[in-house]
Length: 341
Image 1: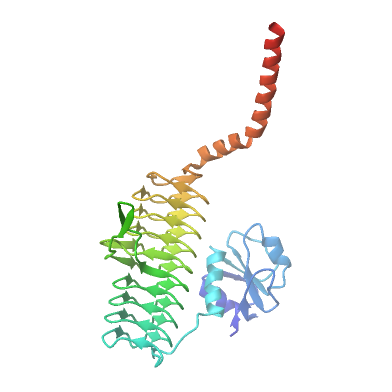
Image 2 (image 1 turned 60 degrees about the vertical axis):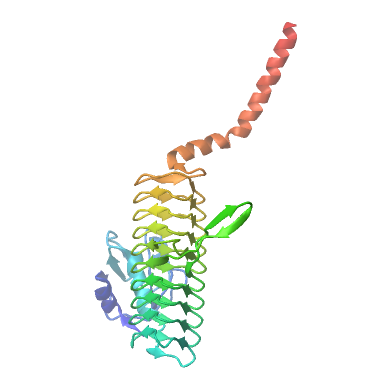
């Protein structure tokens, strides 16, 4: 499916500098781009893009001189994402329930939804318009799935959980597994029933083998637009705001309240029953053990303001040299004391 460069510029709302009738067959990265493809570049990669094999390049609107046909836009990365959707759209499926799927008699599946072979939709569940339930995906009793969602193979939405519109569950994601709740008496662990649910608001994406536990009572809630990477765990009764990022291997203990636009880098984690304000960033492997005010940038374990962590790390890196100097001073002091005896 080819598109003329002028059409692409119009779709992106960009300014074209080059032949409008140049036909583009695809979008790819700088290294792989051929004479019929388009790529994007931002500083410091502009010179590399000028020398690459691409037919045209999407560049920032602030760049005035460029040696190739180009489209100037406000945000080249976002524009390129739109082009990837244009040239490589997600697979489409005919609406309806495949004869090899299991759908309970009292489940409600929108006529424009697709339930593929091997999928399971249990009693009382609701599947919204345009949603695709892939093979081996499971939708539990009374679960509600909104419109235009994608539940990829082996994803699980357990009983009573609720997904908004345009939610994506990557393979192996589990929504509504039991929270880790036990009472220990005389050395034995007694399970506390987890009778709440999980609510994912619109435009949430959950990565492969990520787990969001159902609440003990009430709801575990993930806000609009939050993106969750592979192998992330969010525990029971967490309440997460809008447009947060959880990068791979992050773990959040139970009953944590997290504001909007918070980023947890890889392998970071939080103790339970904490409150984390809006617009916080936690560096990789940060361990959060106390409440964090809005607008904070924390690092280390236990997590502390990033500048404090940098100072502490600088001192740690000097410990070996300081130890040698201390031993030298001790030896000199011992010599002075012997000479005075």
